[in-house]
Image 1: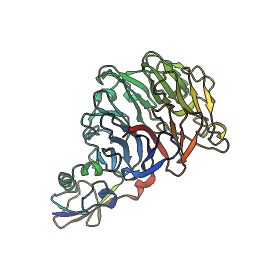
Image 2: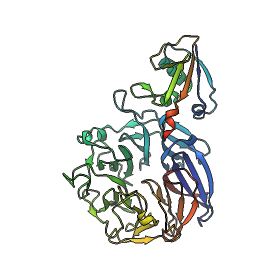
Image 3: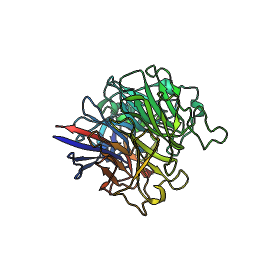
Image 4: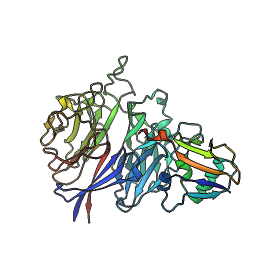
Length: 89
Length: 359
């Protein structure tokens, strides 16, 4: 189970959902799919057609920039962070 | 008790204003929808639920829904996709309810989606984006957006949509096929062909009350009326001070009356002519236009009003409300003759909807 940490602005979209989620998966994409089963609609907020991470969503696995295909381990800590660039509009 | 409710979409969330029928004192709530940019707001006529068309730079497109008057909200984009091999959808731009209980959503890049479960799930109306002219569609300054949806009030097979800078399309078979409806509409920015089949920059259109075959169109290049269900258009720009502007709203009971706000020109700053704010109306189907500026600033008013940022209520006399790109919200409770400011401290206003509530 990797630990996924969600940002404040994303939590606001899902009332009652906590910041930290321990979910199964071997890649970032699999973690997000797992998260979507417990928080329906979460994947649509993070992933767009491609599939790829939305343009202004940054994911870090153990401190390193990641994509949906990036590998994670059971001990990984995954931060999901809205990019600074997304505030232009 | 009768209340008038204004639903206001801005660059930084939705706001709700309410007044008694006098429409002189307004309460304010917001920002709602977690501060997401909101392009359109509507009310489901049978449930009273509020729907908001939105798109976040971070979290993508969604249709928000509140069943309790805007206190709590859900959001969904389930099915709002062209598939993994196609362009991602950036935002939801427009919403409309259909006479058979469906909801239609226009998106960027331009396409139409339908929900038959109150906005929880969406399916692509594929025939529109499969139209043979699709490879030629070019965006306007606001993007390639499907910004206007006008369902026929009784015939569920007929719907009109508007795309910038592509034009008006109509379906007469429930969305299975679509026809361009731009005959007679100028495209001055296309010197090779001023009257193409598609490529017109429609900005907004509205149906005349009780006359589904009569449509009024605010275009990048003039104002038009159709008397034959959009098959042909005739220009009625007449003595308006410019041929450019964005919003247009039609009277809820008088098919001969509509209102609009001319701006000085597409390449001249896009603010009210001579920096003097005014709303213009016709009472004779566009044959003549009347200016009304009483209460509005008449000097140094560099105001712009965007395509969805004007609405009318259904009271008698009709109330008109518009919002500006610099966050001013103006209301008239006498059919557009005189104006009062509600507030001037909102974010950039993108959408206004007026709703009359009976408690």
